[in-house]
Length: 113
Length: 111
Image (cartoon, rainbow over the protein chains, first blue to last red):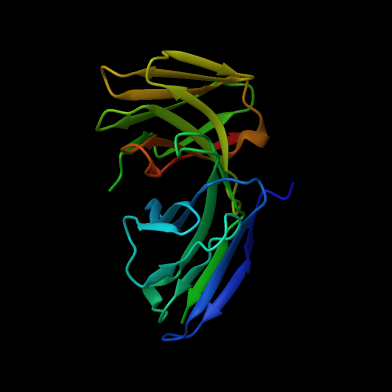
């Protein structure tokens, strides 16, 4: 099993550009989340999903959109990139409820200039 | 908002020594989890302890949970250079919402 796959691994965007960070898992996990990690801030939740067709906002959702059309995929869209969105983004999935161990992707390092 | 807070923020020890990291949290939990993150990599799940458990072991890892003090500790025994990483505690929020992570403890194990 590949686990959780995130693409791309690195990306540089100009302010105002949009892009989609991809996340795919092959473990048939229903629960998926997006976090961002900034120095000294730990991980902060952006959006999450408890199953196909169901998404909800986390702690820092502004400037991001998500959709969950299939169990496997949970893309994160940056609508109009800003320097404040420079961060490392992690996708994570979990079997059944969120209070099981998470499997994390390897992350996408995004720089907005 | 952070639920868990790890202490210390950074820890440096010699290979072979034990490393202890602590986590305090604010509200009632169903379970608490510990994760490791090597530099530039994703987080890896280490261990989960439920609120009705007081201690759990996994290899060289020992986790304790004191719900009356709202705190947990992670002990790594006989540390190795490969244990150098950041360690995060995470707690479950209300049911069916994702884990909330602390800011982590950076552990350096010097050979």
